[in-house]
Length: 88
Image (cartoon, rainbow, N blue to C red):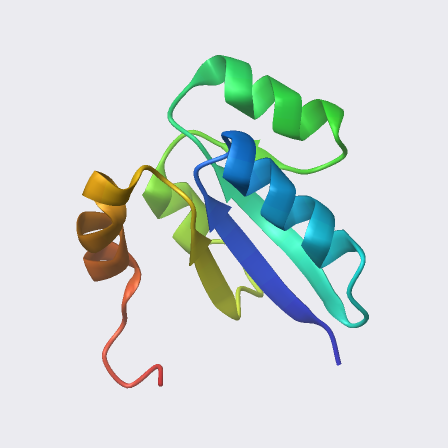
C-alpha cells in the first residue's frame, strides 16, 4: 500500500520534504499546492503535480496525509482548512 502525501507550500523546505518523501518506500507526493506560480513551475519540473489552490489539493484522490510547509504564521490556518472531522 502506498501513502499519498499532499504538500502545502513548495518553498525551500517543501522541496526538501518532497525529496525526503521520494526516498521513502511506499510513500509518494500526491500533489503540491503553492500559491506562487514560479514555485508551482519548480514542482512541475521536478515531476510533481502542482496546483494553486488548497481546495484543488484536497480534492485529489487518494490523499492520505497533508504536510504543511508554509511559513509558520500560516500553519494554523492551513491545518484548520485541511483537517476533516473523523479523519483521525
